[in-house]
Amino acid sequence: MRDNGDAVSAAEPAAEPAQWIGAIAARHDRAAFAALFGFYAPRIKTMIMRTGASAEAAEDIAQETLLTIWQKAAQYDPARASASAWVYAIARNLRVDRLRRDQRAKAFALYEAVEVAEAERPDGSLDAAEREQRVRTVMQELPEEQVAVVKLSFFEGRAHGDIANSLQLPLGTVKSRLRLAMSRLRNRLGDAI
Amino acid sequence: MTIMHHPSDVTLAAVASGTLDEARAVVVATHISLCPRCQNAMRAFEHVGGTFLEAAAPAEMSAGALERAMARLDSAAAPPAAAVEQRKPAGDEALPAPLRQYVMGRWRWVAGGLQLRPIQIASDDDVKVFLLKGAPGTCLPRHRHGGTEWTCVFQGAFRDEHNRYGPGDFDEVDENVEHYQVVEEGMPCICVMALQGGIKLQGWIGKLLQPFIRI
Image 1 (cartoon, rainbow over the protein chains, first blue to last red):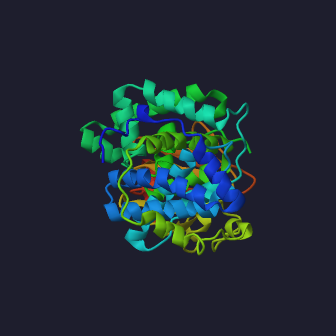
Image 2: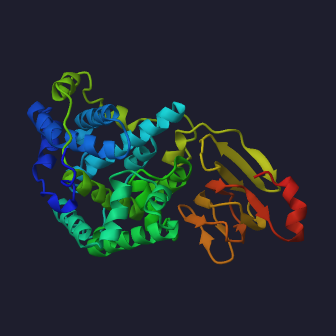
Image 3: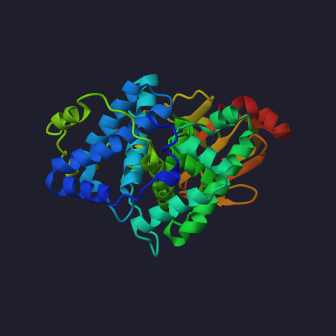
């Protein structure tokens, strides 16, 4: 596994995944599933391993995420989220779920409940590709110290207190870097947030 | 419903990245479920995760991983749409969706006009999660906290020194804040709270009342 290939700048805009999910929703397209699996499963595995899980547990979550996509493809709305953001949210839910289940045998459907809630679309919403591009641009523009904190949080699944400990920074500094990063994102997305 | 008070972006980012402890996440999720603006922010923040995921170096999958997934597709066939939406956990229909899945204790009186209903969520952080219901006009005297206090109102309203908190409003205070809260006249106020380390009443009246307030 390459170690430096996961910098945000290496990302290619992926137009197809949204179409693959659409094909699964429309006609249970197995070829589309295989393509989606080929792209996302190895990346989910990398991400979950970075959160501290074993290779085996990470692969389980990758498998479960792809099966969940197969089941819920019809709920995916390409106008609201890029394919990667949607897949990320599913993998996150399964990771959080598993952490809870390990501790006290109870399913964790909290984020599901949030997803089910009816959302109003933002005014003047950007299309998903444009929104994704803006998010990627913001991540490239952020100062390195802010990107590091954002990445530890979103990619490595570290709580703010853990990040403070491992970077040997006060908790307030970690939070203020995150706040600056998120506020830049809000500015860039304007009405679309 | 006009929501005036929202969680900070740092808090929303913690939920979007799945890194907030469950006890506090429940309170934030309650707010998000009532607040289109924060639902949109969550969606936007999930794109941050999406960009990292997309850019991740692919790990090597074990031999036959795709075949194993493909073999499970038929048994994992999509459940009927109704079954997905109708996932009704046990509990009160009047509760916001994120709260319905939890096991709750009985309502009990805490003090005059105040009732508390514990929600069973374990915490490594000494955080207790509960519903708090205040009768109209109930006043919680001036107090400080042993730690953080996160609140989301979902019925009625209360006021503190500076603000009014109605349905959907979210409030996050830490141990340095000292405040009092009064329930508005009209209807009872119900909120979900994640409270760390209990509360400490201030002033001589507070000291007299403290033994009777079991929070």
